[in-house]
Each structure stands twice: as structure tokens, then as C-alpha cells.
Image (cartoon, helix red, strand yellow):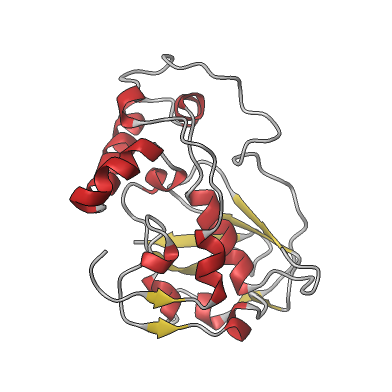
Length: 221
């Protein structure tokens, strides 16, 4: 990718090591109409299954706020591996990534996005930090959006041909953005959850719904 990189210390290295599900859906298998592909129905192991978790009133960390002008996190484009995100050179110290994502700290967060047909549930990933950290938020959003989408999930979550066509166009555009050398590799990996964002894949911040009592909204551009 051209341009400088955003550096996240061990955070970027951690995300780059994440093993995503094997690609199960590629442009060559995209259905022109619903009902073509019929893998097993969504089960308890699906990444799109939501959980009902208690929510408490809280404020978002300033660095995660949509009003955080100049925040390094606003350089993140979920369409790419985080360490490859183009933008101004920034270094985010590990102690910042370990800070609570909210004030007061919470044990879980429910994040929705207008373009996604499912919520993203964030929980603490470390026994040392029994609360959701900034790192937890980005790790969970990133892995959720980079997960592969099966043909059955494509049909189930997008019941209309118009919606399917829009996501298919976003998938092809994302592959093309990888450039001549990366196009084939991205295409082979198949459709991903991030394609449901229809090209609006850059992080803009989180907005509380009823002071976090009704969760959080992910804003993208």
C-alpha cells in the first residue's frame, strides 16, 4: 500500500496474526439471485449470532469519540490489515491500548452500524483487565469485519437482489483497491463482512445510544 503506516506497537502484530476462517465465498460463486447456495443454516458458532448482555451508563474514551479531532484511530481502514493502513505516521503506545474504552469501565459493549445487519459484541479479552479496553474494541471490530461470509449467510442476511448487488460491487471494489499485485489474493479470499459497509470502511468513532444504555453506534466513512 502507498503512503506511511499507522503503527500500533504489539497491537498491529497481534491482529496480523489472527487466523481468519478459510474463504468460503468468492466472486466466481456470487449468486445473481437468492436461493442458489444452500450451506447449513446459521448456528451457534456463527460470528453473526448476537448475545444479550447487560449495559450500564458510560462515556466513551476520548480517543474513540467521533469528536476526537486528529485521533490516530481515525486513520484505520477496516478494509485492510491494520498495519497496512495508509495515513500520517503515528505511534499508539501499549498503555493507551490497555486503557478502558469507557468511563466507567464496562465488561461488555454492544456495537451496531447502520450498514451491518448484525451487532458486534465486545468483551474483555484479558484476565488482567476485567473490562473492555481500547484494544478489545478494535480487535473485536476488526476480526468481525474481516470474517468470511458464506453463500448461505449472503442470501440470508441480504434477502433482496438489490442489496446483494450492492455488496457484490463493494467486494469487487475492495479487491481492486488492493492494486494489480494484491487483486488476485483478495479475490481468492472471498467476500468478507466489511463488504457490507459498501465501501464506507474508515473508522470515524463510536457514539453512545442513551449514554451507552442502548449500546454504541459505529460511525464509518
